[in-house]
Image 1 (spheres, one colour):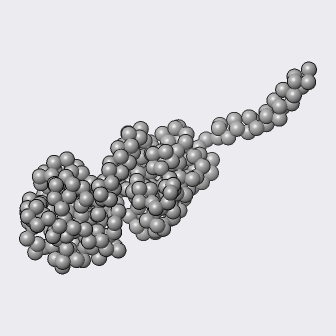
Image 2: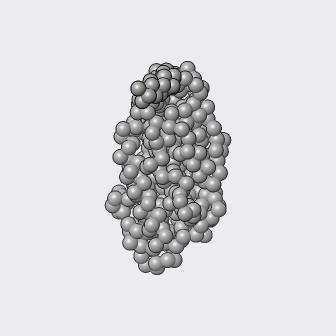
Image 3: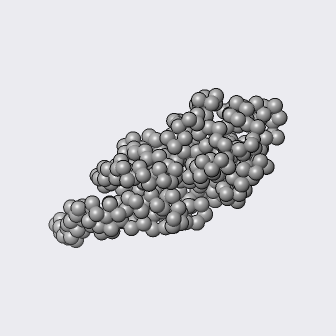
Length: 324
């Protein structure tokens, strides 16, 4: 009899909690404002892309989608904050390649987050091309010339980057590995410095993202030998890919993906993916990408799940090569 009374009492105490949970589950998403973390400062490319989406998403869902800049430590602060946020659909983040690279270069005994375990994808919206460039008066007229020099004098041809572990550094690491050659790394503190010494002919080449290089290429201050992504860049349609230039299978590029903390409900991911996809495929978004030397590229959240695993494995291998 006593056990029966206890069971009834427990049921009575639990009933309000169950009812509250049911009411919360029944609430349409979103019921309040949504934070969108930007792991970079205001005015950067990733910031502008984020803000392009937040306004129309706010209008569509009837709740504010609020960009929140969290720069610092190469984006680590923003990624870590997103990873530790509640998986309820009210924290999103626009991510780039640093999502995968930062934990690999962490000196902590335990990395601050795991890209595959702590994040779930929503949608890819941008592809950021990269290219290998040299000085306008460089003796290297094409990738074949550069490879010939690298093979003739191993370690003497130099390349610049904006620091160890940067995309420019790792791009050249892949180049060395896949071409079985050896160029020497000269790290700088920022990409503008790395480009300046290439333009002056003090450095052999560099592999940088499109946004910073396109005006220099168009102004004749840099000569582009090849783009490093899988397909030709629409803004430079006559420039071959690395694969077309003779390094078969070469592909290094960056992208921008909307993500959420792991555990975010599938129905929320689906709704967000659908609405983001509509915005990503508009002419206005294509215009923004064109102005920032990027390319629109939409993948929904289901297609991005296996893509995330491939990206994490690929960048882990590249970082291991860089450390070898």
